[in-house]
Length: 445
Ligand code: 5CA
Image (cartoon, rainbow, N blue to C red; front, side, top):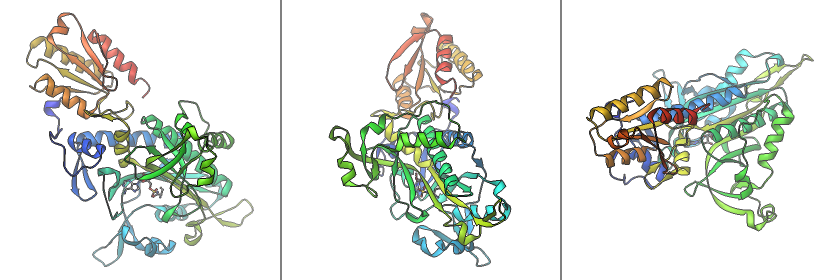
């Protein structure tokens, strides 16, 4: 992408309405535009990151054996009357009527609808286990939308739903989700700690939230800081192996880590003082097991091998896809701008031309541009007729993890400069070597 032809409406001034750094940088870097309280347009740069996050979520869900589908945003109220939640949900639910006077709603979540799909098509235990998920916009008429995409009214969520024959099988699905989430967040450069939580309007009593530590987080968290050192890494996991998956969950949930909702002061006292930490966290996901809470009232049953009919055991599992952009920026920035982890960056590398219009410099940049593209590494090439300082400031603000700087002086010595946004360190090398290095950094991502 050539910056001269892109749409990147960066702001010079700090927007007054933004209270936290991620909101400020998302506005300044031209990633989002507010259209109403808690409702945003995703401008091209923000949209690229959103899509990248979605891709990672899809890959990790499908690796765990979960199946994507797509349900609508608008739902008939009658489904929610069956579960009893239409009246319970309160003012957070956006209710509307169609031209025939039928009650409709903009889905805040999809337990009812997925249960309806299941009961319409599944008859036998032989179709189980089954986990279906989608990534779709939700609407919750939050009383206090704030912090940009962090607490929106319209927001993008991955929500998955498991259907199992009994509690044991459903708890395996719960564990599978926990492990797949750990991998998902790690690929985004985040440490998200599973913490025992309270279930709220979704229901059930087995639930964990995933929290990214950040001083601007909305939840108060109490934890043993050794939990922040745990890493899943690239280890191979057989998602069908119940014992193996449960073992990984035990590894990540044994040390004390709770939100204020479930905090137990006595148990916390048992954590060695040097490791006892109180902080704040951003909730980037939550998983629930709620048994037959929806399947029973809605008649989602299967025939067992013995020929009897039983309601299926279910759970639901959410990731705050749009919120993740805010969480990643809160966790990874400096006073000049965003620092994207390689896994989610909108462009893998930027090219800065220090002397636009100089034949040799332009030609070298064009060569780099083509070579990177040929390797599937779409660069953002700053080919504007701007001062070097302005080009660096834009690159720093939008946070691409790597930058290649090309100028007449370096070219005379046969080199370009490769700079890490995170460390600030630069290295001079030939253009081909720079392309090879960038390709190596992104190999397998
Ligand atoms: N049905 C279940 C799981 S699929 C559910 O709705 N869970 S939830 O309420 O915990 O939401 C899942 C995730 O969506 C949360 O962990 C959070 O990361 C994100 N989320 C919830 N509300 C908002 C909001 N107002 N703005 C942005 N993200 C949100």
